[in-house]
Each structure stands twice: as C-alpha cells, then as structure tokens.
Image (spheres, rainbow, N blue to C red):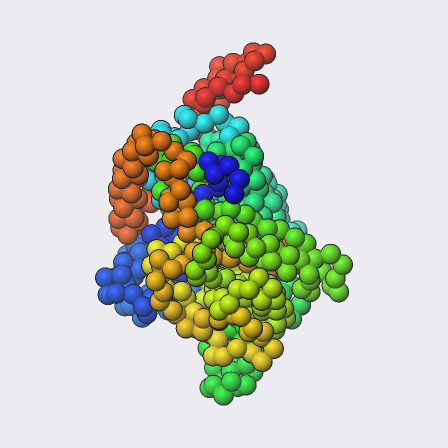
Length: 551
C-alpha cells in the first residue's frame, strides 16, 4: 500500500435514520433486533424512546421505526398518500423528534438532521474538538464535505420558495439560502466546528455520501488534510420527490405493493408496508427514507496522535461513470469498473483473504435486481472470489438518496462489532432474473465469526451514471501493522489516550439513552473580526484561537 501513515481511517460515525441513532450502533441493532440479547434489546428501546415523555410498549416503539405507513406529519394535505397513492416511507423514528434539541426555527428538516448527525459524530469521537483537536491543526488541514443529493425541498427550503407565489404568499429571506445543497457543509463550518478550512459538497445522486468521502480521503492521502467531517442528510419524503419517482414508475405505490403481495400468494386485502421494498426479489419499486449520516475521517498518524479509536480503514473509493447509455436513469457500465477495481485491490492487500461481504445498493426495483447482481457476479467470478456474501439495507431503511452510502457504512461498523449480518428479510425469495454465480445472498440475519471477516464492499449506483464502490477494511488490518509504523513510545501514549477516549464514548452513549444530547450550535457566537482577530504578514496568517497558517 501507499504511505500507511496517510491511510484514511474512520474514527467516528454519527447520525440518525428510521432505525434510530447511528452512534452506539443503535440503528444497526434495530436491523438485527431479533438476534439481540434481552439487555441489548432494552438499550435499543430505551434510546428510541429517549426523547419522548410517553410510555410505550415494545411493539409500539418498534412499529414506529423502519419502513411503515407515512403519517400526516410529512403529508398534512394528503398529496402523497391520497392523490399519488404512495403511503410507504421510512421516516425518522416516531418518538425521536429532534426539532427542539437546538434553536432550529426556519431550518429545513435536512439541516436539522445535519446538525444532529454531526454532533452525534463529534461526541461519539470521544475527544473534544475545540479543546483537544482544533488547537493542533493548521486550519487548512481541516475539511468538510457534506450535503444531500437532491436538496432541501420542504417548506422551509426550495419547496417553500417555489410554492410561495402559487399559494399567494411571500418568499422569506431564508428560503433561497436554505435551499442550497452545500448548506449542510456551511452549517457545519459556521455553527458547529467553527472551521475556516477546506469545504464543499460533491453531489453524485445516490452515491453522494461516497463522493464526499472520496473528496476527503483523496486530500488525506495527498497530505493536505488531517481531519475531515463528511456526510449527507436527506429528507426526501415529500410530495415533489415522491411525484418525481412516481413519474419514472420507480416507486412502490399502494397498488403495486398489493399486486406484488398477490403474486407472492400473500394476503392482499391491505398493504403490508413493512415489506413494501424487496431488494433482489420479485418487487415493485423503491421506498423513500430519511437519514443523516456523518463520519469523521483522519489520517492514521493523526488518529494515533489524538488517541482516536480506529473503527475501520478506507483504502479506496472507486468512482466511474457509465459513458453512453440508453437513458439518464437506466443502469450502465460504470459499476463493473468500480466493483472490479475494489475486488482486485482487496485481493492485493490481503495475503490470505477470509470473509468479505457486499452491502449492495439494492433499491427494490426490477432493473436494479438483475443489473447489480450481474455486476457482482461477473466481478467475483473474474477475480476467483467464491461464496461472496451479499445483503442490502433498503428493505429496512428505504432509499435515503444522498446518505444511502452512510447507512451502509454505519451498518458495516455494526457488523464488525457485533457479527450479525442483516439479511434481505423483506424478500421471500430471489427473483428469477437475479444472477447468483459465486454469490451468497443473505436472505435472513446471519451470525458470523468476526475474526473471519476482513472487509466490506459498499456499493452505490446513482441516476446519471454515478457509480461508487467503497472498500472498508476491518480495524485490525491497521492495528496489527502499528508496531511497524510507530515507535513503542508513540504507541504507549496512544494506548493511554485511547482508554480515555473509550471512557468518554461510553459516557456520551449513557447521556443519549437519557435524552441528553447538548447539541453544539454556535450561531452568532465568537465571530472573528478582521480588525481585532486577524494578523497577516508576508509569511503567515494568524487568526484568534487558531494555529498560525504559513503562506
């Protein structure tokens, strides 16, 4: 491999989707709930109800998660549910309302989810950003790449802006700025990190999370950045996005779901929303979901310096487009390139490869099931990889658009930790046109020996030909090499700091279970004044509270 000190590693993840909170592996645990011990189940339930004063039964709490019937909160006028006939969606958990956790007035839902997700990732890092990390870093060595695939489309963002005149209302001064897709990154820089470092948003349709991850890892490898916050938050369950997917015939509406149930010999007198999305099965379309997923990515050497816990390594994100294709939304050739390169790199990096697994894009559409399975099968066969495990998450979480890759990453970290692969539980059996050569589809939850697990391949296929495959290597791939890279003194200091880091993470998780999040939101605080807080010479720039920038 390249310079191992510059190997990108993930030290924390945070966020929220329809399964629950990302940190503490709560959302992951919800996916494999039936395989958990009673104590583990209690923790999941406690977290899901932590922001509610209501007392609810286990059944009530669980039924308010994952894919279920859309409620009036997201569709007060019935435009989706009655006019379009789409009632399945994966909203954030019913009893986990984040609106009142900070001063979020006039913020689109995706921005609120961003603020929550980044805070969750920062606290879950177990190291104080402002006191222990920021003072170490030249501001140019910090980066933020974040944003949704589609945008902030609710009434506080682009939706409200476009509809204001039609509804005989006036657009507010906030509407336009809140609509911008890079506003997630702007909020992180301005109100959470207080960063003056590198920033941006790399939109790539359903591969957006991986595009942002690639932007950060590229800068880390080239020794330009040491610390990055990357991610995406999307709230696409609204009439406009739903109508757009309805027009493409790609979404699971009520009529299609009932017809699918009838084809499978299931009761079809009412819609079974929990099984509306069936990746790689005889299916009827995707289901939209909400999610906010953010990761903290550093170089290996900086993780050792600050005492961060290494959750996994990200050796590569492979991105290829489709070239000339039949239509902008149809599948193309690019995913064979991304997956083939990821498999080859994995085989080069592991002398004795054991067990690896693909978390597939798996949208639940008939085009995806045949084309993605062919990609996986051809690549695995050409590389001599047999019995490659394959699963997918959209049967639980719906299609969350930009953050979909983050859902996959969060799940892979949970599997590394707990050893349970969530199966394609909503899919009764594979469709006839699914290619299975050299593939082992996990149709049910599967417990594995984590000591045998080497890596995950996380796959994303987006409209327009945006393909990304991310290789995720287990943390011991890195930790077993540390004595060859760092001195005994460095590693002794690291181990002591790591112990404190882990203690802090446990304290944070305990606070979350009590509903105490204490979100960082620093609007209009400690603003830098160029008259008093800036010193500039021909050799350097110095800002108050930041290390000097050599120029």
